[in-house]
Length: 297
Image (cartoon, rainbow, N blue to C red):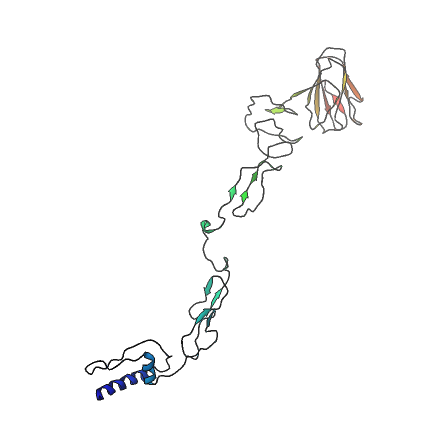
């Protein structure tokens, strides 16, 4: 009997020395005293009570963003810890720091490049070139990921910069000059308003007229073939064109129908308002000197 009491005394001393201020516990444990067999059983709570262990949890510290039992302190027993943050990714400020949640800033919190494959829209569609507008230009810029980028390339014309097409086409505006630095091979028929300069020598493209016509310096050909087979008619010269503007005229037929050249505005031809061509197949050249026209031949 003395041996049993001594064992219980040792157990009590152990709890008193190392288990002060522990919370209450639950569960089942067996206390066995060796004296020719088992003496009895007791729960952990009974053992703690018998040892005189008492105490409560006065407070529990957790990082900012977590909540303990709904208050700052709890009574004896288990403590519940819950999240006290808004929904979203959680950030930590480091060891013993706080926890926060919310949207992540790509500029200040994310380092490195985001792979395109991880983006909802990771590509830009390059559409077939369009023809809208009068110049080569993108339809819109910048273009968002997932959107379509369209490059407009209009057909070249008198009012638009663009590409050469396989159909009929007018290139360049009136009065402009197109220069070929190398050789130009023309396999079909090419109409050149104003003529073509080759090796410094201007090759004029003729224009045939059969009725009364007013010439426009910027658009008219400079070599005029007047066909008066049916009737006589008048060709009116441009009014005060650029100094040095020249025209050559030839009456195609040998009929009695005349071709009359009339000066425009207050300009004159050799001091007169008109110059009449009666003879056929003769070439007459006239040049504007800044004030009036004069015949060269």
